Image (cartoon, rainbow over all chains, first blue to last red):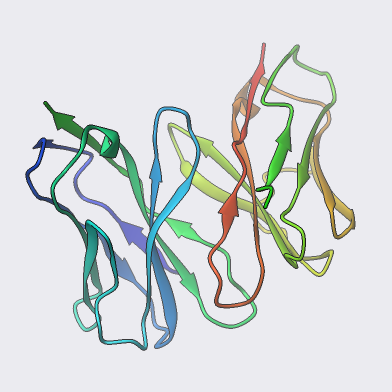
Length: 115
Length: 113
């Protein structure tokens, strides 16, 4: 079974600074998808960024980028120029390719942005 | 485009009562997922449908839980009888194609007294 591990229950960053959230996963598959979702206090689940395992290039979405290390099964999220609105719980998630596309989530990292 | 719509947003009921949660996926999406979020267990997949057919319900905790998708635009998750340990936030999500990400509804916060 696939597992996703987020070893940092809480992180904090100063506004305008950069922070990196860690995620590791375990799978025997060679093709899969990885995601970062953000959950603010409003409890919405908002997709931040996704990575396809067969792509070597790291995904980037504006201030958000990932460091995908397939061999190490590591998928970290970097947030640059942190803003107060980035404060939220961040979940790393794994999805296999093929017909079974359910998400397996990590336990989450609570990010606090300090003014 | 309208996102995934869940109702009710909050539900408070007494132990033993039947609870029905509703979900309208994004139009054109052919896969629908029900998740449960608790402090103890985090986010867990309960069941998912593909083209209205249940594909994997191994996450459904007990026979008290049932889910249906009578058509492409509507799904229900029912708990009967409800118990205090069922208190959680229940999310519905949908996706369009195999390589497309899931879009989540705002969730239903369920409290069983």
